[in-house]
Image (tube, rainbow, N blue to C red; front, top):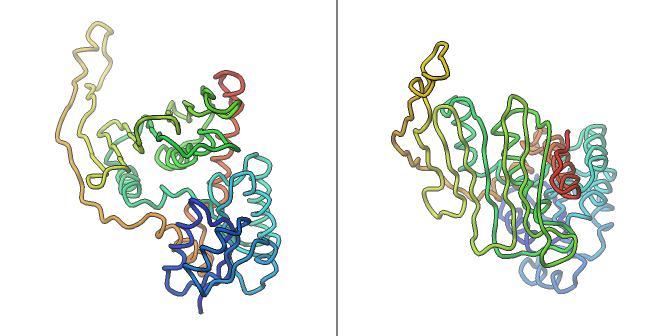
Length: 338
């Protein structure tokens, strides 16, 4: 029996989600909702079998709909996700799941109390290239992971209700939490608003984790280049994931610093260290559309009752870091403890 889905928000990103849910077997998108009549008309033309509405309550009142997909602008995420959970629906909500920590906590508690699946659209956790590197880390191929840094920049899309950090950083924060596998302890962030007052177009953030690990994030929608790159530095090897590359999305560098064991005097320490620069390995990765994998995972979690990879608690961790980063931005880069 097909899983019946309702979706709200069919705009720039939502139309991609709709396309993928429509392509999945044993899934029926029952109703598509958007407040813009022009978008609803386009959906009706492209998918004649889908009911359409501008009223979100129509999805909530439909007892046959098991899961609701929320792809609206960020400020609407919490209110709609809460209403869907209260109506007994499983929820897929785009990132970030909420703009305030207390809101994200409320969604997690609500989903757990009702035994409903709450999944956040942290797309990179389903991306085959990122899954490949995650597997390398889990197997110890990179050694101890020291730090990572990400660059997520482009020219556009310029948001009005959220800054570049809030819009772009959740992707790389979800990856940092997974790859570093440690608790974040503090955040510092700097940015600047050039186009709109109080909406930062560029932001740099440093997230400190337990055991000295850290993640550095560069986000901007005001940049001449489109870059989507994450570099992971380990004690044995280093990995670079380039999501813009059409092929060769992952490169593994056999590079590092080998230190001879034993106590060394400061004067001799340089002699105890050896720089290692070995081969560069470009693995063959079976690429599938990450968004399709993400959508299929949500449906499977509804069917099986499994916990999503990007569940509400993962989403809550990202919101906590974002909230601290926003506070740091307002305090001109002051370190904010978590």
